[in-house]
Every structure is written in C-alpha cells, then in structure tokens.
Image (cartoon, rainbow, N blue to C red; front, side):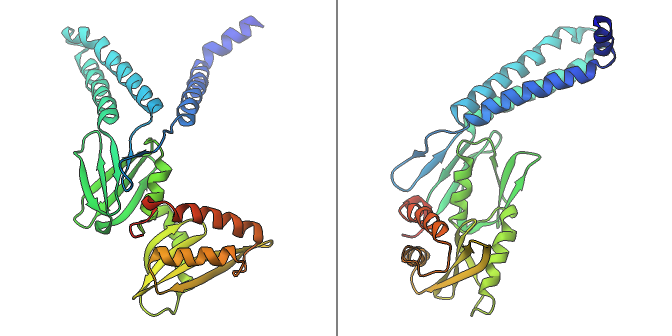
Amino acid sequence: MMEALKAFLRDYHFLVSGAFGALASYVIMSWFYKGNAAPLETRGSDTQIFRHSPRTRKLMYGLAGACALMAALPAYALIYPDQWTPKLLLILGFGFGTIYCLLEVRRALVIIKPKHITVSGAFSAKREVAYSDVVSVKSYDTLQMLCLITRSGQRLWISYMMANFGVIIERLNQRGLAVDTQQPALDDMATALAGAEGKPELVWFMLPFLSVWKLGVRHAAVLARFSETGFEGYFVHYSNGSAHTAAAELLAMLRNKEIAVEAELADAMATDLEQVLANKLAWSEV
C-alpha cells in the first residue's frame, strides 16, 4: 500500500502540488474576502472616502515581503555568466511585484463627492473628474479592475479589492453611470419609455428594480413590477420635480399600495428606497 502511494506521489506529484496550491489559495482568499470590508469613511456630510481594508493591506504587505525575498534570493548568482539571465528576470519580476504591492496599499484611494469623483492608484496620481465628464464605465474581470473613461479619453482605474467596492458601484449608479455589465438591464427598462417625448437620459438608478430618467423638463421613474407569478413588466411614474422628487413620489405610491406589485416585495422595495432617499451621498441633488 505504501509503495503504491509513493509511486502515485512520484508519478503525479504535479497533481498533488497543484491541489495543495489550490487549497492554500482557497483558504487565503476566503480569509481575505470575508474581511474585505471596513466602516465607511466620511468627510463632512457630502464626501465619502474609500481605501483598502486593513485585511487587504496586511495581504498586500505580505505579498510585498514575499516578492522582495524572491527578488533578493537569486541576486548572489548574478556573478555566474551562465545563470544571469533567469536570475535577472526573477529580480526584475519580483522586484516589480514588491513595488506594486507597496504602492497599491499606500496610494490607492477613491473619494466620492456630490459632483466629482477622485481616484488615485499605485502608478497614477490623484485625479478628479466630474461625473458628467465620464462617458463609460468598463469592468475588466481578468485585471480585477474597474475603468472610468472620460470625454477626453482619460482612464481612471479602481481595484475590485477596494474595501466596500459595491458601495462605489452604487454611488456611480446614483449619478446615472452604469457599468457595462449593467447596461442590458437598463436598456430593457428604457423600453418602457418608448414613445415618450424626447430622448430619455439616465440620471439615477438602483438595480434590479428602479431607474430615473430625464425627459425634457420632467423626470420618469421606471419601477419593475412583480407578483406571485414573477416579473410582470414596468410601471412608469412621471414627475415635474427633480429625480429625488420622482423617487420620493414613487415611494409614497409603494407605501400606499397604489402600484400593482406583490405586497411583500413592495414593502421590501419601499424600505430600500426609503433608506437611499434619506442618504445625502446617494443624490447629487436633494
């Protein structure tokens, strides 16, 4: 039995090492994601600041130390002419990893204000742009980064590892900015406004159930309707007030059961919307 086990380990050692590496990665990343949150940091009543969480900083400092060690170990072998190329590549590669981890922890920052967003990264200086200047928001899963693209072609990169990353997405949505993966749902909502006078301009939304659009001098709030049988289409409420007013009026209709939405879902929607309406940071106009 032992001989068979030894033979298996000898012949399939790459599978064993791969399984061990996968298990170790799972444990480390589970620890990381469960702690990748931090209390929301605010400055006054209209500014929100996002940094890496304490657990992320510990992970990045650990990676920086590991990279520095791996870069230093082969340095002594540079004196051997037949080995300098791979050793130099190790030093450069892990040396870059050390610098990146340290800079990412120290410099990565997102500041949310009513009219502007400020972003800085490991290799980019702090830049502030108006939400109105952002033309698209793209997600790059392979890079684990979100990219805000401005009218001038400027790109602002935000790491998925940022603490409270979901709140950053919400704040962008609350300025009418959709991540590319959210666009199909919004396009579907926009069909409810087909035939409306003027071209709808998205100004605010909270998926999966509500979006607010500007139509000339008024606003239209589009609410997804649900019943016991599931999704039943959209309800549109037009308002002559601001986007905030349109959402507040729709909230009152939900509370008063004036919209054909399954009662339990209507209460849940109303509760979520009520909390957002009370949050000044969720609105560029109040």
